[in-house]
Length: 283
Image (cartoon, rainbow, N blue to C red; front, side, top):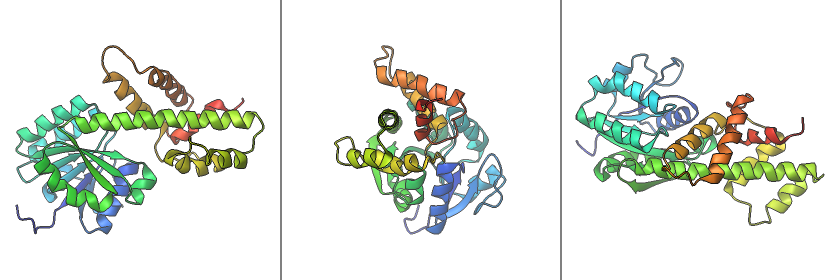
C-alpha cells in the first residue's frame, strides 16, 4: 500500500469517546464514515449500513460497550473484511477477548490491533488521550499516523492482550483514587470544613494529582455529567477482578466493586464516577 495514500478512516460506535474521536478525525480530514448500532443520521459521515461503511474504509476504529458488543459487530462485518482493512479495537474488554478477536479478524485476511484509551471525555475532545497499543508493530505503525492526530501520546505495550491488561491496571488505580477523593471530601465536609479550604489544603498536599484537578470543579459545582460513567468504570473493575487470577489478591478493588454495584443499584450508573460522593451524603 502506498504511504502517500490518505487513509480512509471509519469510527464504529458513537458513544462518549467514539463521538469525540470521530469529530476530531473529521476536523483533521481523515474521517470517511461513521456507524452506530442506534442510528445517528445527523452525525458527520454517518452510514446506516455497516456493510457499506466497511467497504468505504481502510481503517476501522471500534468503540462499543463490551466484549459481547465487539463480538456481535465482528459477526456483522467479517464477511466484508479483506487484506486492505485494519481493525483498531479501542473498546475495553477482557484481554483474552481481544486475542480471540485478533484471530477472527486475521482469518479474513484483515489486520488487527488493540488501541486502548487512557483518558475520558474532556481529554478526547481536546486530543489529550493516550493510546496503549497491543499487536504487530507493523500494524501499529500503520495506525499511529492516524491516532497521533487525535491524541497526546501513543505507547506500544506488547503483543495483543497486553494493552488490555495495562488499561485495566490504570483504571483500577483511577477507580480507587476517585473513591478516596470522595471519602476525603465527604469526611472534611461532615467536620465542618468548607470546600474552599478543603481544596486549598489538598493542592498543597502530596495527595493532589491530575485526577483531583479534573474532579475539583465537578465536586465544587456538584456536576455529575458523565466524563467517565459509574457504569463503565464498574464494568472495568469487574473485568480486572475476573482476569486477575485464582487467588483474588485485589482486596481493595474487591471492596470497591461492591460500592460501584451499590451506586448502580441506586440509579447512578449514567453519572460520572465522581457521583460516588452521593453515597456518602447524609440522608
